[in-house]
Length: 191
Image (cartoon, rainbow, N blue to C red; front, side, top):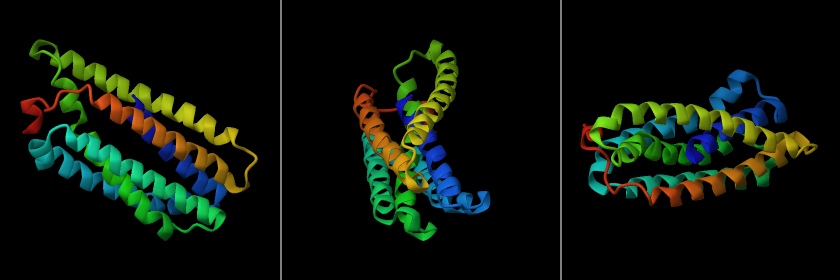
């Protein structure tokens, strides 16, 4: 819940900052978020593929760490540039953050389902899907509230900075909770 809520809320806050704060069009904001999507795709292929087979749960912790680095770097860029930030200045940090998210998102359900008996896998998978959706809704509500509560700050910079700090905290909490997961995912999840 922490992971999905933090990521979905972060995407909302960045989009609002780009459109409301910087005045980007929807297309320009979408293109500016392209690096996070590219990083996510690359991380998911690597995390869901051979890295999880080789390193087990350490892939999740590596992904969380990379995500934290990317979000912290995004904070540093926003803090330094404020309303003069460009798409290119955000590209690197967002690519790193997305890569970290991808390393986690692809294998995560396999690790969670490894703790469930074979007879309960179908039900557990359905519950996981529902919790993912609930986490996303809660993340949008909570982080959206944090974003707008920072007003009035010029260009919503303060709101985004508060959201970025909160996302780092939530990601650290998710990383600590991941220590409770089995060391290896379900075998059929690796195929």
